[in-house]
Structure formats: structure tokens, C-alpha cells
Image 1 (cartoon, one colour):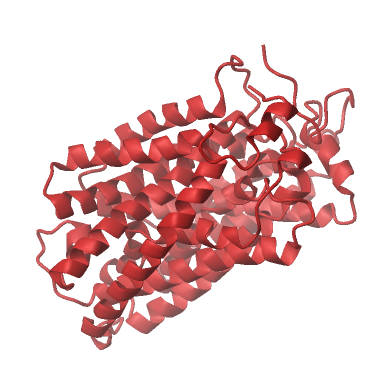
Image 2 (cartoon, one colour):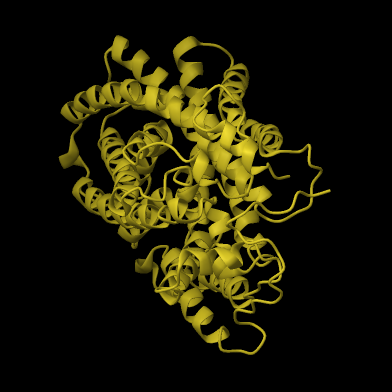
Length: 478
């Protein structure tokens, strides 16, 4: 499943070439690019309707006042963006995808838990959500059947992901100007026509602010498991401040802008029989509405190129033995088919399904982040070589991490979840809490991880050192 170092080096910065890498490290000879490129890599994927709909939920569904929604959006997105920028720092250091870097905390085989969850969440879950919004946009713009529009969207985004890292980076770069200009103009018109004073928050249910903050955090933090997937080709000499700043800024600016616009759009009256995308563009002049629908479709494709690509990277990072001929690119095609089937089922009642998905995604990411952050703190002072030595060592284990993550996720949901399908123990008695499962799971998992590390056999065990370290490619699978 792995590529030889020479094969990866030959890939270099070629755009029209299928990326040969899977979970193996990128050698220094193949490193290229500048951190500034990460700005549009992480701006373009958020310039889409899924981002807008987060703001619509805050005012139109949760009932928050407009300015309360703005505060919750800035708070939640800010926290998620900072986490995203921080995690990407491991890319230039080790040249590996985010879910391989996570082996230092979870162990080689224990890391299959977060890697598998991310493969499902990114390659199928997010893929379906963004495919539906892009398909709706094309359906409204062209009047073609929604299913046909879905298939057009799927073919384009799977094709981009199939080529891999360099093609994705170029696609995000060239879609950035179109998306930025169209959405900025549309934002100005919608904000001018909105009646933000009408959204007073008088009908907000208890906990709506925390629910919005949790949803916006979940949306921004949903990118964190992808962090180093797009920084691992940068040279080791790349400035750390730039590697962390540009991705965080790209996520923050794009999400905050479109979520605020979404919140404002919820105060504009629109016919109830319109699709979510048509309702959003209803107040725009025809020419701008058409351009915005086109931008929504392009933005959905830009987002899903990353989702499919990172989902396939997470899958190959699980350590499952596959035939050598089955590369990351092939896995991306398989995920595309699976995600299409889920998206097909989501063409109806997409609003409720998206609301639930936004909250559910934070349930495992919160505990995962707690453990990854804790591991980074505990490994302060260790050299890159020391950390790299465990990333590719199949004998390295740290069972405290997957156990703490599973327990933190389960307890967080049981105690703090508050959505249409399930209400946790505490929100039943104190509705004002809203849904704080992501925060509760974060705290529980972090505390459990520190305690379980002290239990003999559950803490870090290096094992045999004869496995090839992460500073070199892993052995090819038979």
C-alpha cells in the first residue's frame, strides 16, 4: 500500500499526476510549496452553503437573536480554527498525514479508532452533506433533476480527490477568487436586505447559545483531523507561525463571514416550499442569485475534494493490510461511491439531518482533540526523531488513549447530548445547558487519559524497535 521514496520524490510538485503516497512520510526531496498557500486551501472549502446553513440554524432553528448568534459564531469558530492551525504543525515536522501523527498518542493499532471514525466522517458523512447542498444549488440554477445534479457533483469532486494532494491544492487556489468575490457581493446584498432587529432571541429555547457555539465549533473543528494532510509536503524549514496561522485564518474568516450571512438571511421572508439553497438566494437579484448558486456548487465540490482525500488517507492510516495495487487513489473512488449513496438518501429532509450531523461530529472530535493535545504537551522537549520512531513502530501501544476516547465520547453523549434524536441526562433536568457533549467529552477524555496512563500495561509501551520508523516508508504490504 506504500510508495517507494523515489516514486514520491518524482511526484514532487507535479499537478497532473496521481499522487503515489498513502500513509508513508513525504521525503525531504519531495517537499515543496509555501505556507501562504494554505490560506486558500482552507478558505475555498468553507465558501459553500453548508457553512451558510450553520448560521441559518442559529437564528432560524435555534431561535437566537442575531447579535447573540454572531457572538456564538465567533467564539465557536475561533476555538475550532485555533485547534486546526495547531495540529497542522506536525506536517512539516514528520511529513505524515494527521491520522498517522496521532499514533504518538494512540499507539499504532489503537489509532485505528480515530482513523476509522475520521474515514467514515470525512469520506462518507461530510461528503454526503456537501454533495447534497451542491446538488441543490445546481438543481435550482439549471432546473435539472436533483439526482442528475448529484451525480455531476460527485464525478467532479471524486476526480479531483483521485489525483491527490497537488491537484487539490491547485483546484482550491483557482476557485478561491471566484468564491471570495461572489460570496462577498452576495453577503453585502443579503445583509442590506435583512432585518436583524427582528431576531430578538425571544423565542430561543434554553441552551441555544451553547448549542450554536457547539455547532460552529464542530464545523470548524471538523477540519482538525485533516490538519497535517495538507502541510506534510511543506519543507521542514517552513516557519511554524506561518504553518499555523494561514490555515487557522482561512477557516476562521470564511466560516465567520458566511455563518453571519446565514444568520442574517434567516430574517428575510422566503416561500416555504423552496429548497434551502433557493431560499438563501431568494432575496438576490437574478444575475447574482445565479452566480451565488454556481459558487455554492463549486464550494461544495472544493470542500468534498478534501473530505474524500483525507478520508482515504485516514483509511490507509489504520494499518489494514491491502494489496499493493490498492492505493489511496483507489480508496478515494470507493469512498466516493459510498458517500454518493448516503447523499442520495439525504436529498430529502436535509435540514434536520445536517443539524444532527453537525452535533454528532463533535462528539468524537472533542475527546480525540483532548488526547492529542495532552500527548503534545507530554512530549514537549522530545526531538522529531524520538517521536518519529514510534509513528511507524507497530509494536508501540498506548491503550489508555483509545479507551479514554471511547469512554469520553460515550459519557459525553449520555450526560450532555441535546438534539432531536436523543437528550442526555443533564439537559433533561437542566435544558439551559444546551448541547455541551463536545466540551464534556473533551474534559472527561483528557482526565481519563492522564489517569489510565498510570495503569500498568495501558500507558505507552514502545515494544520492539525493529519496525521501520516513520522517518522512512513503512514496509509494503503483500
